[in-house]
Amino acid sequence: MGKVPASKSKPRNGSNGSQIHFSIGKVAKILNVSTSMLRKWERLGIIFPERSPSGYRKFTRVEVERLKEVQKLKTEKNVSSAAVVHLLKHEGGPNKDSAESSSISRRLKRLREQLGWTLSVAAERAGISVSYLSNIERGHANASVATLQKLASLYKTNVLSFFGDVLPAQKMVRPSERRRLVTEPGVTIELLALGQCAMEPHLFRVSPGASSGGAYTHEGEEFIFMLNGTLEIWLDEVEHYMLNAGDSLYFSSTQSHRWMNSGHEDAVMLWCGSVIF
Image 1: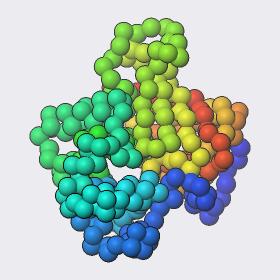
Image 2: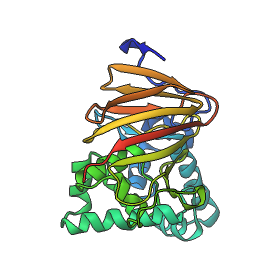
Image 3: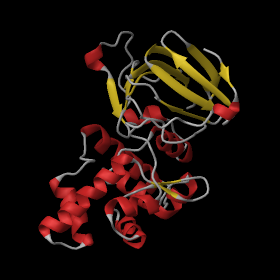
């Protein structure tokens, strides 16, 4: 493992990467619809693109597939855009709820309401779109790791709290006893310790092309040990590391960090972070 010059720190989007981003104009051409229609679907909560630092909409391939599903529903059922929201909710779409995402959705909504914030206020302070936060809270979308970290910092908690109620501490945790958290497509996190711990040990599984969904920061320190595959990680958009099996990385969580699996097999890693209560 070695440090790579900052000039090479741009992510490499493979042809089969699920995190390749498309502009609103490109998506409009793919679907043969107007950009104003895409904006309307966003306002209705049918889609929830993230935004670049400069404010431009970013669509992943998952989003494009969801939009194809929207077109299919409108064509086959001859319904309005507003009705599509109801149909996707009750018939199930690409982001069908899981038990884990539903549980996280309820917790995030409760945390926001406890502060007396509207969706608009919370979304603006977290730096995400209102429609994206709305869909996360309704269980229609899985948040990226970066988004979960931003919301955890905003609500003055930590990602550990999203795994559910704190269970009695136990020294040994068997695989069947692990708490599991699924973020956006391709990223699964398993909690390796139960109880209120001073460390946050996780087992990350990241599919080829999957990523953190952006950069994030928080208090604490991070330690990564690669078990399998490849992971690229950028710190402060200046330091760039390529981690392979057997490599380890230690850094301050206050450094802006984002990551991506640019390889062709699952990246599996032990990821430990200090917990700020």
